Amino acid sequence: MTRFTVLAFIAGFLGVVCFHQPAVGLLHAYGVIPSAPYGTAAVPPFSVPQWFSASFWGGLWGIAMLWLFSRFRVRGQWWKALLFGGIALTLVALLIVFPLKGRGINLAVFPIGFIVNAAWGVGTLVFARLMLPGLTPVDNR
Image 1: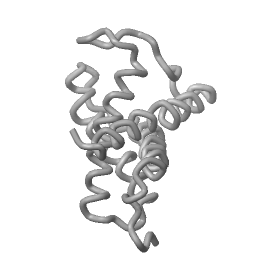
Image 2: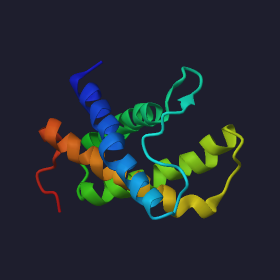
Image 3: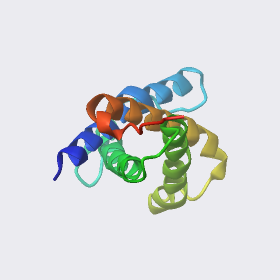
Image 4: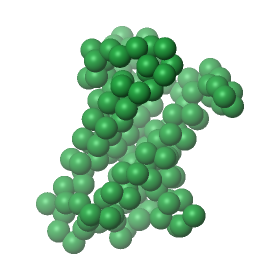
């Protein structure tokens, strides 16, 4: 495992803890969603808390997003991180994860998923920029 992979995982993990879950908290506080942030209910198969499971998956998605950004030296990373999180993660959740968990496909929740996952994308890039300065393209317009 490379240094980049470890740091990208940490950035994605922290993106959930510090950006995704606070976005969930704001939506919960305003009555938009019923679930509170930092859920502690056990998630199968390892019975880890919900927040930890989400953070683990955020770490894996962080590796994917940051690898793409480093591989292609993407310009406009802030917008692309927001859109990557908001669109890619939300569509995977709605079209793959929810049906596998027996929740079915409900595209009406896309805006909520977009908000919390876009927050993750931006947060992951914040931490990546701190830990992986070489990720920044020369001209980042």
